[in-house]
Length: 90
Image (cartoon, rainbow, N blue to C red):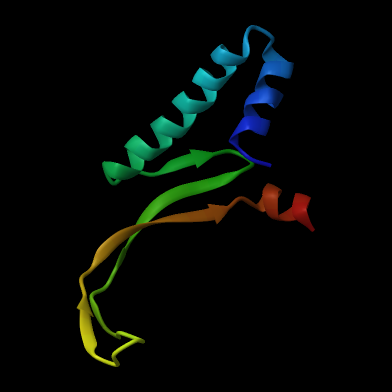
């Protein structure tokens, strides 16, 4: 399933136009991204929790040259599935 399939599913459920359904899906995605950028956490009951995690700085190796390079610390997105989602997938 991709974003377009989600838009069609929302359109089928809510009616209206596909453009309106796409705006709804975009708004949900943008809200999640905006909250994560601010360092917040998004919890959707039955689905899971979107959050960010700080990955520590580390030394890595360039596979082409074998040279060691420094990788700075960075924030990365993280998703913890809800129990209901885990049970549904089993």
